[in-house]
Length: 121
Image (cartoon, rainbow, N blue to C red; front, side, top):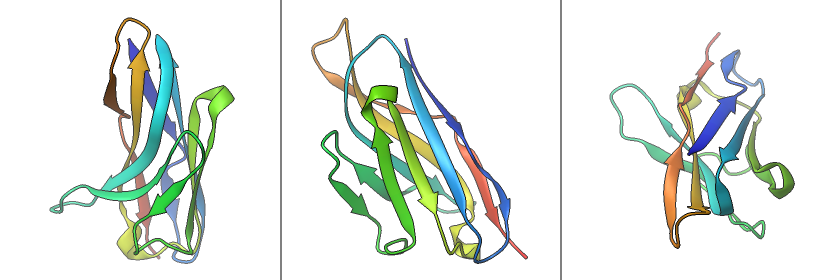
């Protein structure tokens, strides 16, 4: 079995910062792309940022220049540093990883449980 465990969410004032972490564990052969998605109440889930196993990153236009995604392959962990937070960043943030298990020959997407980020004064 594979699990993604997220941490780091919370309440922050506009202009503040938070760092999210997501660690993968289990019967893992390899991890390709990892990323973060978010979903606000009444809205569809949207991509925030992704990072490949080689460190190539991609960001949503709404977070470029404010958020930074990174990963530690030795720890099977992906991070999201969020600076200059805005009220519109309020959402549940979900970690995602494309993982090949040892017993399989293909990769599958796995999701974390979600962590709440609230930006409010």
